[in-house]
Amino acid sequence: QVELVESGGGLVKPGGSLRLSCAASGFTLSDYYMCWIRQAPGKGLEWVAYISSTGSYSKYADSVKGRFTISRDNPKKSLYLQMNTLRAEDTAVYYCARLVVTVTSSWFDPWGQGTLVTVSS
Amino acid sequence: QSVLTQPPSVSAAPGQKVTISCSGSSSNIGNNYVSWYRQFPGTAPQLLIYENNKRPSGIPDRFSGSKSGTSATLGITGLQAGDEADYYCGTWDGNLSVGGVFGTGTKVTVL
Image (cartoon, chains in turn purple, cyan):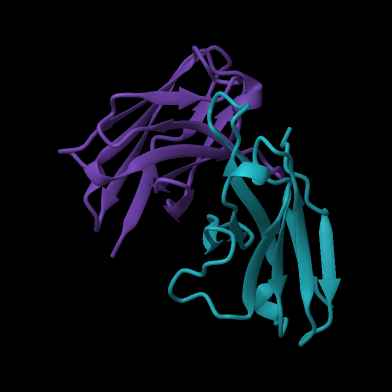
């Protein structure tokens, strides 16, 4: 069964750091792009960052560029999001998702259950 | 803020049909496939439609998708109480640094 399980969320002060992890099972992680998506309380979904299947390149939303770093360890079947210089507006549930990419299209399937990050003093 | 616009809410009685629109531009929907996701309260989103109109295994044919120009539409027929959820469209956007975007989301209410 294909599954993604996030961990590492919690309460952090503004300016602090946090590292999220996503454990993948039921599929070969190295075959897929992966993505972090977040959802602020009561708000919609926002792409945060994605990474290629080998980890050779990644892209970030402007709102997190320079502060967040996405990485992966395929042998360990894990995806990571290092979040530095956190701000109150980074408060959200963070989901990892498998990004299925073809020549002409892409979609997310499946999604993890999410981990809550709260940035507050 | 999202560049894909959806109505905040739609509603209908059980057994009826609802449609949810997703309006974008040439940089996103106009030149890319659209996917749709359903999110029940307190849970993670789930893939409902991919490549404009394809359903993953396990998704009933009551759910359908279409695309025309810079807009996409999700249809739900035979509405059931269990369809109450938030629905999001998503696609790539060539103008965004991160690559992709989701719609603003639509709350479906079964009257």
